[in-house]
Length: 444
Image (cartoon, rainbow, N blue to C red):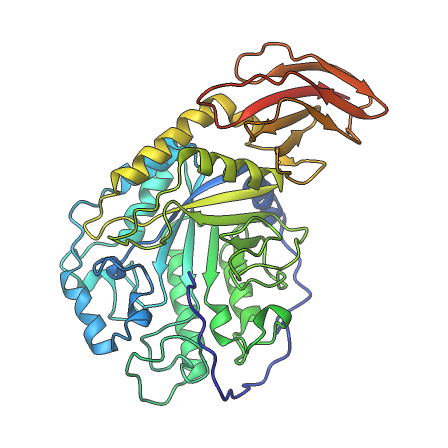
Protein backbone atom coordinates (compact mmCIF):
# COMPACT_ATOMS: atom_id res chain seq x y z
CA UNK A 1 0.00 0.00 0.00
CA UNK A 2 1.07 3.57 -0.48
CA UNK A 3 2.09 5.81 2.41
CA UNK A 4 4.21 8.65 0.98
CA UNK A 5 4.54 10.55 -2.27
CA UNK A 6 7.84 11.77 -3.63
CA UNK A 7 7.51 14.41 -6.34
CA UNK A 8 10.26 14.61 -8.93
CA UNK A 9 11.53 17.92 -10.20
CA UNK A 10 12.02 16.67 -13.75
CA UNK A 11 10.07 13.87 -15.36
CA UNK A 12 10.61 12.16 -18.66
CA UNK A 13 7.44 11.14 -20.50
CA UNK A 14 7.76 7.65 -21.93
CA UNK A 15 4.91 8.27 -24.26
CA UNK A 16 1.45 7.00 -23.77
CA UNK A 17 -2.02 8.40 -23.76
CA UNK A 18 -4.46 8.39 -20.91
CA UNK A 19 -5.82 4.89 -20.56
CA UNK A 20 -3.24 3.02 -22.70
CA UNK A 21 -5.58 0.08 -22.83
CA UNK A 22 -8.00 -1.72 -25.14
CA UNK A 23 -11.46 -0.16 -24.90
CA UNK A 24 -12.93 -3.12 -26.77
CA UNK A 25 -12.80 -5.38 -23.68
CA UNK A 26 -15.90 -7.53 -23.35
CA UNK A 27 -16.05 -9.65 -20.20
CA UNK A 28 -16.73 -13.34 -20.70
CA UNK A 29 -19.78 -15.10 -19.29
CA UNK A 30 -17.50 -16.71 -16.71
CA UNK A 31 -16.22 -13.29 -15.73
CA UNK A 32 -19.71 -11.82 -15.38
CA UNK A 33 -20.70 -14.75 -13.17
CA UNK A 34 -17.60 -14.16 -11.05
CA UNK A 35 -18.50 -10.48 -10.71
CA UNK A 36 -21.89 -11.45 -9.36
CA UNK A 37 -20.29 -13.80 -6.84
CA UNK A 38 -17.91 -11.01 -5.83
CA UNK A 39 -20.76 -8.57 -5.23
CA UNK A 40 -22.47 -11.16 -3.04
CA UNK A 41 -19.34 -12.05 -1.03
CA UNK A 42 -19.07 -8.72 0.80
CA UNK A 43 -16.21 -9.61 3.19
CA UNK A 44 -12.62 -10.68 2.58
CA UNK A 45 -9.26 -10.97 4.33
CA UNK A 46 -6.22 -9.01 3.13
CA UNK A 47 -2.81 -10.43 4.17
CA UNK A 48 0.33 -8.28 4.08
CA UNK A 49 3.25 -10.54 4.94
CA UNK A 50 6.81 -11.17 3.77
CA UNK A 51 10.43 -10.33 4.61
CA UNK A 52 9.34 -6.73 5.13
CA UNK A 53 7.64 -8.02 8.31
CA UNK A 54 11.00 -8.72 9.94
CA UNK A 55 12.05 -5.12 10.82
CA UNK A 56 8.58 -4.56 12.31
CA UNK A 57 8.08 -1.17 10.64
CA UNK A 58 5.49 -1.98 7.99
CA UNK A 59 5.72 -3.04 4.36
CA UNK A 60 7.27 0.24 3.19
CA UNK A 61 10.38 -0.11 5.34
CA UNK A 62 12.73 -0.51 2.35
CA UNK A 63 11.61 2.81 0.91
CA UNK A 64 11.14 4.67 4.18
CA UNK A 65 14.61 3.81 5.52
CA UNK A 66 16.36 3.91 2.13
CA UNK A 67 17.64 0.37 2.55
CA UNK A 68 19.85 -0.58 -0.38
CA UNK A 69 19.11 -3.62 -2.51
CA UNK A 70 22.28 -5.29 -1.20
CA UNK A 71 21.29 -4.86 2.43
CA UNK A 72 17.59 -5.58 1.98
CA UNK A 73 18.37 -8.85 0.21
CA UNK A 74 19.86 -10.11 3.49
CA UNK A 75 16.36 -10.32 4.96
CA UNK A 76 15.86 -13.34 2.74
CA UNK A 77 18.52 -15.20 4.68
CA UNK A 78 16.55 -15.19 7.93
CA UNK A 79 12.92 -15.24 6.81
CA UNK A 80 11.89 -18.53 8.39
CA UNK A 81 8.21 -18.42 9.41
CA UNK A 82 8.06 -21.69 11.32
CA UNK A 83 4.70 -20.77 12.93
CA UNK A 84 2.95 -20.31 9.57
CA UNK A 85 -0.07 -22.57 9.16
CA UNK A 86 -2.01 -22.03 5.95
CA UNK A 87 -4.99 -24.11 7.05
CA UNK A 88 -5.23 -22.17 10.31
CA UNK A 89 -5.12 -18.84 8.44
CA UNK A 90 -7.88 -19.92 6.06
CA UNK A 91 -10.00 -21.31 8.89
CA UNK A 92 -9.56 -18.02 10.77
CA UNK A 93 -10.87 -16.13 7.75
CA UNK A 94 -13.73 -18.57 7.24
CA UNK A 95 -14.75 -18.39 10.90
CA UNK A 96 -14.73 -14.59 10.59
CA UNK A 97 -17.40 -14.85 7.90
CA UNK A 98 -14.99 -13.93 5.13
CA UNK A 99 -15.62 -15.31 1.66
CA UNK A 100 -12.21 -14.74 0.08
CA UNK A 101 -8.56 -13.98 0.83
CA UNK A 102 -6.28 -11.54 -0.98
CA UNK A 103 -2.69 -12.66 -0.42
CA UNK A 104 0.46 -10.67 -1.07
CA UNK A 105 2.44 -12.63 -3.65
CA UNK A 106 4.93 -9.89 -4.48
CA UNK A 107 5.05 -6.47 -2.85
CA UNK A 108 7.00 -3.34 -3.81
CA UNK A 109 10.20 -4.81 -2.35
CA UNK A 110 10.18 -7.37 -5.18
CA UNK A 111 10.18 -10.50 -3.00
CA UNK A 112 8.14 -13.37 -4.49
CA UNK A 113 6.28 -15.61 -2.04
CA UNK A 114 6.17 -18.55 -4.46
CA UNK A 115 8.52 -20.84 -6.36
CA UNK A 116 9.06 -18.45 -9.25
CA UNK A 117 11.60 -19.16 -11.97
CA UNK A 118 11.79 -15.46 -12.90
CA UNK A 119 13.70 -14.17 -9.86
CA UNK A 120 16.10 -15.57 -7.27
CA UNK A 121 14.62 -13.22 -4.65
CA UNK A 122 11.90 -15.64 -3.57
CA UNK A 123 10.64 -17.84 -0.76
CA UNK A 124 12.45 -20.95 -2.00
CA UNK A 125 15.82 -19.32 -1.32
CA UNK A 126 15.01 -18.64 2.34
CA UNK A 127 15.62 -21.04 5.24
CA UNK A 128 11.89 -21.81 5.11
CA UNK A 129 12.17 -23.11 1.53
CA UNK A 130 8.44 -23.74 1.04
CA UNK A 131 6.03 -22.27 -1.50
CA UNK A 132 3.71 -20.11 0.62
CA UNK A 133 1.40 -19.32 -2.30
CA UNK A 134 0.90 -23.03 -3.01
CA UNK A 135 0.22 -23.76 0.64
CA UNK A 136 -2.37 -20.97 0.81
CA UNK A 137 -3.94 -21.96 -2.51
CA UNK A 138 -4.26 -25.59 -1.43
CA UNK A 139 -5.77 -24.59 1.93
CA UNK A 140 -8.26 -22.24 0.26
CA UNK A 141 -9.33 -24.90 -2.23
CA UNK A 142 -9.77 -27.43 0.59
CA UNK A 143 -11.88 -25.09 2.69
CA UNK A 144 -13.93 -23.47 -0.07
CA UNK A 145 -12.49 -19.96 0.16
CA UNK A 146 -11.73 -17.98 -2.99
CA UNK A 147 -8.17 -16.68 -3.40
CA UNK A 148 -7.02 -13.40 -4.92
CA UNK A 149 -3.36 -12.58 -5.59
CA UNK A 150 -2.00 -9.14 -4.76
CA UNK A 151 0.75 -8.29 -7.24
CA UNK A 152 2.89 -5.14 -7.23
CA UNK A 153 3.45 -3.42 -10.56
CA UNK A 154 6.36 -1.43 -9.17
CA UNK A 155 9.63 -2.84 -7.86
CA UNK A 156 12.16 -1.07 -5.60
CA UNK A 157 14.76 -3.75 -6.22
CA UNK A 158 14.99 -4.59 -9.91
CA UNK A 159 17.28 -2.63 -12.18
CA UNK A 160 15.02 -3.06 -15.24
CA UNK A 161 12.09 -1.27 -13.56
CA UNK A 162 11.88 2.41 -14.62
CA UNK A 163 13.11 3.67 -11.27
CA UNK A 164 14.31 7.02 -12.63
CA UNK A 165 10.74 8.06 -13.39
CA UNK A 166 9.16 6.24 -10.45
CA UNK A 167 8.42 8.43 -7.45
CA UNK A 168 9.39 5.92 -4.76
CA UNK A 169 12.31 3.63 -4.02
CA UNK A 170 14.88 6.32 -4.80
CA UNK A 171 17.31 5.35 -2.07
CA UNK A 172 17.86 1.68 -2.83
CA UNK A 173 21.17 2.10 -4.62
CA UNK A 174 20.20 1.12 -8.16
CA UNK A 175 22.58 2.47 -10.79
CA UNK A 176 22.26 0.35 -13.93
CA UNK A 177 20.23 1.27 -17.00
CA UNK A 178 16.60 0.21 -16.82
CA UNK A 179 15.00 -1.97 -19.49
CA UNK A 180 11.26 -1.41 -19.41
CA UNK A 181 10.29 -3.97 -22.04
CA UNK A 182 12.29 -6.59 -20.16
CA UNK A 183 10.47 -5.68 -16.95
CA UNK A 184 7.05 -5.94 -18.61
CA UNK A 185 7.95 -9.40 -19.90
CA UNK A 186 9.14 -10.37 -16.41
CA UNK A 187 5.74 -9.46 -14.97
CA UNK A 188 3.92 -11.37 -17.72
CA UNK A 189 6.05 -14.44 -16.98
CA UNK A 190 5.35 -14.22 -13.25
CA UNK A 191 1.62 -13.73 -13.74
CA UNK A 192 1.58 -16.71 -16.07
CA UNK A 193 3.14 -18.80 -13.29
CA UNK A 194 0.56 -17.62 -10.77
CA UNK A 195 -2.34 -18.30 -13.12
CA UNK A 196 -1.24 -21.72 -14.35
CA UNK A 197 0.28 -23.42 -11.30
CA UNK A 198 -2.09 -22.73 -8.40
CA UNK A 199 -5.54 -23.74 -9.58
CA UNK A 200 -8.47 -21.35 -9.95
CA UNK A 201 -7.53 -17.76 -9.05
CA UNK A 202 -10.48 -15.53 -8.17
CA UNK A 203 -8.69 -12.30 -8.98
CA UNK A 204 -5.50 -10.29 -9.42
CA UNK A 205 -5.19 -7.22 -7.16
CA UNK A 206 -2.68 -4.81 -8.74
CA UNK A 207 -0.93 -2.02 -6.86
CA UNK A 208 1.79 0.49 -7.76
CA UNK A 209 0.46 2.03 -10.96
CA UNK A 210 0.50 5.39 -9.14
CA UNK A 211 4.31 5.24 -8.87
CA UNK A 212 4.53 6.34 -12.50
CA UNK A 213 1.88 9.06 -12.44
CA UNK A 214 2.94 12.73 -12.64
CA UNK A 215 2.02 15.35 -10.08
CA UNK A 216 -1.74 15.78 -9.88
CA UNK A 217 -2.26 12.05 -10.34
CA UNK A 218 -5.94 12.12 -9.40
CA UNK A 219 -6.75 14.61 -12.14
CA UNK A 220 -5.06 12.68 -14.96
CA UNK A 221 -4.61 9.05 -15.85
CA UNK A 222 -1.63 9.32 -18.20
CA UNK A 223 1.33 7.53 -16.58
CA UNK A 224 4.94 8.32 -17.36
CA UNK A 225 5.51 4.85 -18.83
CA UNK A 226 3.44 2.47 -20.91
CA UNK A 227 2.35 -0.19 -18.44
CA UNK A 228 1.08 -2.37 -21.32
CA UNK A 229 -2.03 -3.01 -19.28
CA UNK A 230 -4.01 -4.07 -22.34
CA UNK A 231 -1.53 -6.90 -22.90
CA UNK A 232 -1.31 -7.84 -19.23
CA UNK A 233 -5.08 -7.80 -18.71
CA UNK A 234 -5.66 -9.77 -21.90
CA UNK A 235 -3.13 -12.39 -20.77
CA UNK A 236 -4.89 -12.80 -17.43
CA UNK A 237 -8.33 -13.16 -18.99
CA UNK A 238 -7.00 -15.62 -21.56
CA UNK A 239 -5.39 -17.81 -18.90
CA UNK A 240 -8.38 -17.67 -16.54
CA UNK A 241 -11.49 -16.02 -18.03
CA UNK A 242 -13.28 -15.85 -14.66
CA UNK A 243 -10.33 -14.14 -12.94
CA UNK A 244 -11.31 -10.64 -11.80
CA UNK A 245 -8.88 -7.75 -12.26
CA UNK A 246 -8.66 -4.75 -9.96
CA UNK A 247 -6.05 -2.00 -9.89
CA UNK A 248 -5.35 0.24 -6.91
CA UNK A 249 -4.52 3.27 -9.05
CA UNK A 250 -7.08 5.52 -7.31
CA UNK A 251 -8.54 6.52 -10.67
CA UNK A 252 -11.66 5.63 -12.61
CA UNK A 253 -11.47 1.97 -13.73
CA UNK A 254 -9.61 1.34 -16.96
CA UNK A 255 -10.82 -0.99 -19.67
CA UNK A 256 -10.15 -4.61 -18.79
CA UNK A 257 -10.71 -4.11 -15.08
CA UNK A 258 -13.55 -5.99 -13.42
CA UNK A 259 -13.96 -4.24 -10.07
CA UNK A 260 -13.16 -0.83 -8.59
CA UNK A 261 -11.24 -0.54 -5.35
CA UNK A 262 -10.91 2.17 -2.74
CA UNK A 263 -8.06 2.35 -0.21
CA UNK A 264 -8.83 3.24 3.41
CA UNK A 265 -11.96 5.08 2.34
CA UNK A 266 -15.55 4.21 1.60
CA UNK A 267 -16.49 4.57 -2.09
CA UNK A 268 -16.25 8.16 -3.26
CA UNK A 269 -14.57 9.36 -0.05
CA UNK A 270 -11.16 10.96 0.15
CA UNK A 271 -10.13 11.32 3.79
CA UNK A 272 -6.69 9.84 3.09
CA UNK A 273 -5.72 11.58 -0.15
CA UNK A 274 -5.87 8.26 -2.01
CA UNK A 275 -9.52 8.59 -3.03
CA UNK A 276 -11.74 11.04 -4.81
CA UNK A 277 -12.46 8.90 -7.85
CA UNK A 278 -16.15 8.77 -8.71
CA UNK A 279 -17.99 5.51 -8.18
CA UNK A 280 -18.29 3.36 -11.30
CA UNK A 281 -20.86 0.76 -12.23
CA UNK A 282 -18.41 -2.09 -11.59
CA UNK A 283 -18.42 -4.20 -8.41
CA UNK A 284 -16.81 -2.24 -5.56
CA UNK A 285 -14.34 -3.02 -2.79
CA UNK A 286 -12.79 -0.96 0.00
CA UNK A 287 -9.79 -2.06 2.05
CA UNK A 288 -8.83 -1.03 5.57
CA UNK A 289 -6.49 -2.03 8.38
CA UNK A 290 -7.22 -3.25 11.91
CA UNK A 291 -4.56 -0.95 13.38
CA UNK A 292 -2.91 1.77 11.28
CA UNK A 293 -0.46 -0.49 9.43
CA UNK A 294 -0.68 -2.94 6.55
CA UNK A 295 2.47 -4.94 7.27
CA UNK A 296 3.57 -5.97 10.76
CA UNK A 297 4.42 -2.92 12.86
CA UNK A 298 5.66 -3.74 16.34
CA UNK A 299 4.86 -0.28 17.76
CA UNK A 300 1.40 0.15 16.23
CA UNK A 301 -1.15 -0.68 18.92
CA UNK A 302 -3.92 1.62 17.62
CA UNK A 303 -6.37 -1.22 17.14
CA UNK A 304 -9.81 -0.35 15.87
CA UNK A 305 -12.65 -1.53 18.08
CA UNK A 306 -15.00 -4.29 17.01
CA UNK A 307 -17.73 -1.65 16.81
CA UNK A 308 -15.61 0.43 14.43
CA UNK A 309 -15.01 -2.58 12.20
CA UNK A 310 -18.67 -3.64 12.15
CA UNK A 311 -19.68 -0.09 11.28
CA UNK A 312 -17.17 -0.02 8.42
CA UNK A 313 -18.47 -3.33 7.08
CA UNK A 314 -22.07 -2.10 7.26
CA UNK A 315 -21.36 1.26 5.65
CA UNK A 316 -19.36 -0.44 2.90
CA UNK A 317 -22.30 -2.77 2.24
CA UNK A 318 -24.55 0.31 2.27
CA UNK A 319 -22.56 1.54 -0.72
CA UNK A 320 -22.80 -1.90 -2.31
CA UNK A 321 -19.09 -2.52 -1.67
CA UNK A 322 -17.08 -5.39 -0.26
CA UNK A 323 -14.91 -4.86 2.81
CA UNK A 324 -11.37 -6.25 2.51
CA UNK A 325 -10.00 -6.22 6.06
CA UNK A 326 -6.23 -6.47 6.48
CA UNK A 327 -3.96 -8.31 8.87
CA UNK A 328 -0.17 -8.04 9.01
CA UNK A 329 1.06 -11.32 10.52
CA UNK A 330 4.28 -11.45 12.52
CA UNK A 331 7.54 -12.53 10.84
CA UNK A 332 7.28 -16.04 12.29
CA UNK A 333 3.90 -16.57 10.63
CA UNK A 334 1.75 -16.17 13.74
CA UNK A 335 -1.23 -13.80 13.72
CA UNK A 336 -1.25 -11.52 16.76
CA UNK A 337 -4.13 -12.13 19.18
CA UNK A 338 -5.54 -8.61 18.77
CA UNK A 339 -6.28 -9.42 15.14
CA UNK A 340 -7.66 -12.87 15.93
CA UNK A 341 -10.01 -11.54 18.60
CA UNK A 342 -11.53 -8.94 16.28
CA UNK A 343 -11.97 -11.38 13.43
CA UNK A 344 -13.65 -13.88 15.75
CA UNK A 345 -16.07 -11.20 16.96
CA UNK A 346 -17.01 -10.29 13.39
CA UNK A 347 -17.65 -13.93 12.56
CA UNK A 348 -19.93 -14.29 15.58
CA UNK A 349 -21.79 -11.09 14.63
CA UNK A 350 -22.27 -12.24 11.04
CA UNK A 351 -23.85 -15.50 12.19
CA UNK A 352 -26.74 -13.39 13.48
CA UNK A 353 -26.73 -10.48 11.05
CA UNK A 354 -25.13 -11.94 7.92
CA UNK A 355 -28.39 -11.97 5.96
CA UNK A 356 -28.34 -8.16 6.10
CA UNK A 357 -24.84 -8.10 4.54
CA UNK A 358 -24.24 -11.06 2.23
CA UNK A 359 -25.80 -10.97 -1.25
CA UNK A 360 -27.25 -7.51 -0.60
CA UNK A 361 -26.86 -4.40 -2.70
CA UNK A 362 -26.38 -0.82 -1.65
CA UNK A 363 -29.37 0.94 -0.17
CA UNK A 364 -31.71 3.19 -2.11
CA UNK A 365 -30.07 6.03 -0.14
CA UNK A 366 -26.38 6.31 0.60
CA UNK A 367 -25.11 5.70 4.14
CA UNK A 368 -26.08 8.48 6.54
CA UNK A 369 -24.71 9.70 9.90
CA UNK A 370 -27.36 7.59 11.64
CA UNK A 371 -26.47 4.40 9.77
CA UNK A 372 -26.97 2.65 6.44
CA UNK A 373 -29.37 0.64 4.34
CA UNK A 374 -28.79 -2.61 2.49
CA UNK A 375 -31.40 -4.39 0.43
CA UNK A 376 -32.35 -7.48 -1.52
CA UNK A 377 -35.47 -8.35 -3.46
CA UNK A 378 -38.41 -7.82 -1.16
CA UNK A 379 -36.36 -6.75 1.86
CA UNK A 380 -34.79 -3.54 3.09
CA UNK A 381 -32.38 -3.78 6.03
CA UNK A 382 -32.19 -0.63 8.13
CA UNK A 383 -28.89 -0.54 10.05
CA UNK A 384 -29.12 1.92 12.94
CA UNK A 385 -25.52 2.57 13.96
CA UNK A 386 -25.81 5.77 16.00
CA UNK A 387 -26.73 5.06 19.63
CA UNK A 388 -28.60 8.34 19.98
CA UNK A 389 -31.13 7.54 17.25
CA UNK A 390 -34.55 6.49 18.52
CA UNK A 391 -36.71 7.66 15.60
CA UNK A 392 -36.26 7.55 11.84
CA UNK A 393 -38.16 8.92 8.88
CA UNK A 394 -37.13 7.31 5.61
CA UNK A 395 -38.39 9.34 2.66
CA UNK A 396 -38.98 7.94 -0.84
CA UNK A 397 -39.17 4.45 0.60
CA UNK A 398 -39.04 1.97 -2.31
CA UNK A 399 -42.02 -0.22 -1.29
CA UNK A 400 -45.59 0.55 -2.20
CA UNK A 401 -46.85 -1.79 0.48
CA UNK A 402 -45.28 -2.89 3.78
CA UNK A 403 -45.84 -6.51 4.73
CA UNK A 404 -43.76 -6.99 7.85
CA UNK A 405 -41.22 -5.07 9.96
CA UNK A 406 -39.13 -6.78 12.64
CA UNK A 407 -35.80 -6.87 14.47
CA UNK A 408 -33.35 -9.17 12.74
CA UNK A 409 -31.85 -10.16 16.09
CA UNK A 410 -34.99 -11.75 17.56
CA UNK A 411 -37.76 -11.45 14.91
CA UNK A 412 -39.87 -9.27 17.19
CA UNK A 413 -42.26 -6.89 15.44
CA UNK A 414 -41.36 -3.21 15.04
CA UNK A 415 -44.24 -0.69 14.80
CA UNK A 416 -44.03 1.64 11.80
CA UNK A 417 -46.16 4.07 9.81
CA UNK A 418 -46.11 4.50 6.05
CA UNK A 419 -47.55 7.63 4.44
CA UNK A 420 -46.72 9.30 1.13
CA UNK A 421 -43.70 7.03 0.67
CA UNK A 422 -42.31 8.06 4.07
CA UNK A 423 -41.61 5.20 6.46
CA UNK A 424 -41.62 6.32 10.08
CA UNK A 425 -39.98 4.12 12.68
CA UNK A 426 -40.43 5.27 16.26
CA UNK A 427 -39.27 4.06 19.66
CA UNK A 428 -36.17 2.35 18.26
CA UNK A 429 -34.96 0.32 21.19
CA UNK A 430 -31.52 0.55 22.69
CA UNK A 431 -29.65 -2.76 22.48
CA UNK A 432 -26.65 -2.71 24.82
CA UNK A 433 -23.43 -4.20 23.47
CA UNK A 434 -24.87 -4.39 19.94
CA UNK A 435 -22.87 -2.31 17.43
CA UNK A 436 -25.74 -2.35 14.91
CA UNK A 437 -29.49 -2.40 15.45
CA UNK A 438 -30.93 -4.03 12.32
CA UNK A 439 -34.56 -3.63 11.33
CA UNK A 440 -35.94 -5.74 8.47
CA UNK A 441 -38.67 -4.26 6.30
CA UNK A 442 -40.45 -6.70 3.99
CA UNK A 443 -42.65 -5.34 1.27
CA UNK A 444 -43.36 -4.92 -2.39
